[in-house]
Length: 143
Image (cartoon, rainbow, N blue to C red; front, side, top):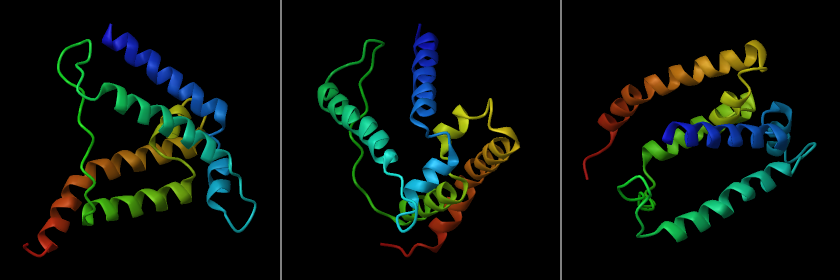
């Protein structure tokens, strides 16, 4: 049952990304082009994701999910070197390619070679991240 719910949730998410145009790289890059031909539709897609998630976090605080265990707590807001470097790399990749992980997976079936190259590069980056993080940690000064 969990696998079926995950499949349905992922399919709904992918369909939402497709319908909202977030798998179109020019639309995403249009959002980032604030001094050119700016396209504000991504703000509505983000709001459509953030607002329900805020409600879900509020409603599930202190409750147990149906399958057992507990819902994860809200993450602590910690700004460290790893978060900043990761955010910068994510933003640069998003701006250059016009895709982030969700839309990249959703566009695999029709994205052509560009989508496949992006997905391969993303997987390589995810695989290299622990090694790069360990190297960054060595440069951090002791507290």
